[in-house]
Image 1 (cartoon, one colour):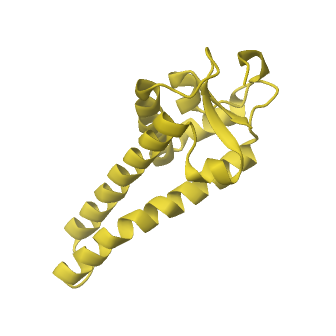
Image 2 (cartoon, rainbow, N blue to C red; image 1 turned 90 degrees about the vertical axis):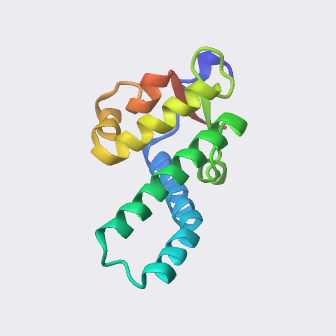
Length: 141
């Protein structure tokens, strides 16, 4: 992908949301063995500490999944299903490790607050906050 083509090949918001839902479902499935172990150990999820541990595990698993898949291949499994790719806006290549870490951090922060996702609605290019802060873009391949 040439850097000049980023605006022409930018992914739509709908494709990005569907991709994100697939990724969140996948991360939930990755965390389910931890939930099973917690249930076997505690007997129920009525304890707020058990819910906190499970939520923390989901955040860590999601962060690692997003960081590793983006840094190694430039796309998550949800993006692969919809033919999307994350690129560096300067070079057109897959993001560096630092960009992938920042992108994952700001993505999770955007999910928690909702502000970063809403940023895409007012952005002229359709970039989310994690795109803007890490100088990356999601394009259709």
